Image (cartoon, rainbow, N blue to C red; front, top):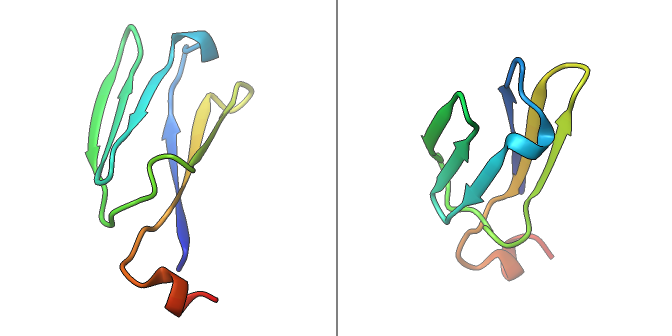
Length: 76
């Protein structure tokens, strides 16, 4: 698959309290109450991901594009 989505439940958290850093193989999430360092199963394009916070569900959805060698051959 070209991308994957991670859903993180963050009860009693505001959008302004979330710090998110994506590296090639690591997702680093921090709030005043919680810390998460997640090693990703695939290398990702850390510059072109998307994140949105669904305040009603208290969930952060992060969508990351998988970065593979020769993507220009495999996916065109």
